[in-house]
Length: 239
Image (cartoon, rainbow, N blue to C red):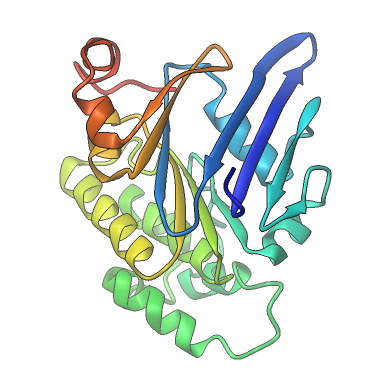
């Protein structure tokens, strides 16, 4: 069992529909872990449950040895877990820098070093720091969503479909940033429709089907698996 993030027999339901069924998995510190699966497999539900946005029906989530299931989302952020949601969800009427500062809403210290770090990762955000976020391109908004999450100085960053709807060149940039962030010491839990690219950077991967884990292994092992190739690597698929 990982002492960093551990899910044990996690089950989550929406109404009468069980979206996650007894999932047990580990996210070791310092690694890139990815969840792959078809649309409706329960991947986003797992991330939202970890973040405290969806209550668990059964099972438990522990982070650094502490039980965090049932905690408020802001308390979970305070412990060092942030979520970059699907669809980016930037504040369109606020400037880039205002969006970034919102990511650090729990902090009381100086943000200069962190802003410089985000601007180094995403130079275009620095160029547009006083531009309204709603006027940015889709790729720039995704950069802003990642940068906003980084402003809380997370130990674990969870990303839900960061490449969705983006041009191939921007997708490549986003994946390079994921690797850079990880090399800087931040653990990454990734959901990604582009299973091929996700598995190429993942240290470990889990396959989720209709709420249950069906397969796991290193990214390289799953890339070479004939069943995975047939199901997920022939074309990019949505959740």
